[in-house]
Image (cartoon, rainbow, N blue to C red; front, top):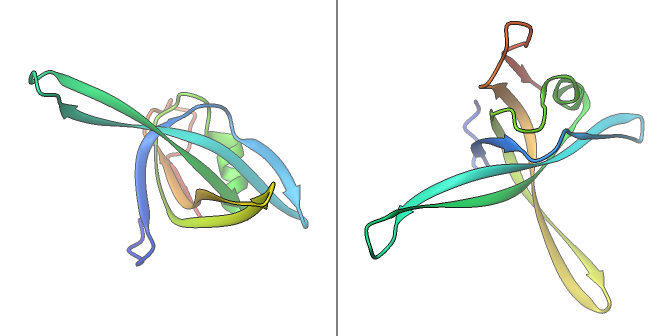
Length: 118
C-alpha cells in the first residue's frame, strides 16, 4: 500500500454491498466501512466503539470492488481523504469520504482474488 502525505489505511467490514453507478462513462462504487476501536473504561473494562467511513472508488478499482467486496467481508484498504462542502438551507455541510486506491480481501474463499489496485 502506498505512502502518500494524504493516505489512509483501514481494516473493516462493509455495511452493504457496493452501490454501482456509471458517471461520465466511468464506473463508480460507494459503500460504508465499519471499523472498530478498543479502549478501557474507568472500571478497566474493555469497550468497543464502531466508526463508519464513506468509501468511494472509480474506474478499474471500482470494477474490482464491485466483483469482490461484499457486505460483512473483512477488507483492508488504502486511499486518500476528501472533504466536500455543500450548502443546504443556507448552511454549509461537510462530507468526508475516502477515495479508495487499492484493497485486499482479508476474509476470502479459494475463489476470491486476493487484491486489487488501481
